[in-house]
Amino acid sequence: MSLIETEELSIYYERSAKQKYGPILYIGGTGGDLRNKPNQLDSPLKDFFEVISYDQRGLGQTSKPHNVYTMKQYADDAADLINKLQLPRLPVMGVSFGGMVAQELAIRHPDKVSKLVLACTSSGGRGGSSYPLHELEDLNPNDRLEQSIKINDLRITDDWIQKNTEDWKRLKEMTVNRNQFKPDHIGYMNQLMARKEHDTFDRLYKIEIPVFLLGGKYDGIAPMENMKALNKEIQNSKLKFYQGGHLFLIQDKQAFIDIIECLLN
Image (cartoon, helix red, strand yellow):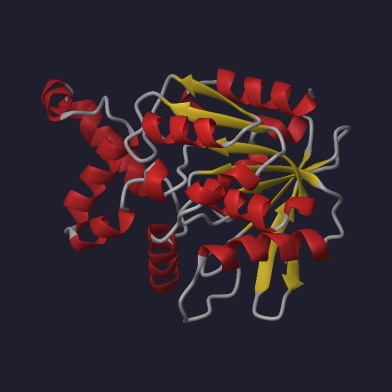
C-alpha cells in the first residue's frame, strides 16, 4: 500500500506509469475512493502524464480523523503529498469538490502548481456555490438517489422519466451499483460540511497561472453561471462547455482531448 505520513494523516495515493510529459496531480470529487474502478488513473491523461491521485482525508484508505475538516486542510494535504513525493512544480487537475481543493491549493501554495484545470466546480461566495449536497442527507434513500441523478444532468426531468421509464430504472440501478466501496459516513459528512463553507471568490485574483475551466451544459451541481464567475475572476483563464451534465468528462470525449492539448501548450 502506498502511503505518505503527515503530522495528522496517513494519505493513500496511487500513480500511473511515468510518461514523457511528467507528473500531474489529479484531485477527485466528493466521496472519492481509489478502490472504485475505473478511476482517474484510467483517464486519457495516463497516456501523456504520470497521473498521481489520492484518497482525501476521511475517505478511502486515508486516515479518518473525527474532527472538523476545513478546505484549508484539504489544500494543505495536497501540498503535503507533493512535498513528501518530492514532486516538481506541476499541473493540477481538480474535478468537482477536487476543483475547490485545487483552487485553495493554488492560492495557498502557488509554488506547487504550474497550471490548473478546474472541471465542474464553483468558487463559492459571490461566485455561486455548488449544489448543497449535504441537504440530500435529510432525504430517504430513494428520494436521495433520484434527486442526485436529476441534479447530475438537468436533461433528466419528470417529463423525461415518464417517457423513458425503463431507461430511468436502469439509470437508477447503474447509479446504485457504480461504486463498490461506499464512503465512511463520518468522513463523508465532514467533507460535505467543509464543502458547504468553501469560498475562494475574493481570493481568485491571486491565481496567476494558466487555468483551463470546463463545465457541462446540463450540470445542476456546478451550473454554468458558476463556471463563468470563475472565468471572470481568474485573470489568465479560458472556459469551455461540453455536452453533458456533471459527468461530462465521461459523456463528451472532446473534453479530455482539449485538456491534454491545453496542458501540452
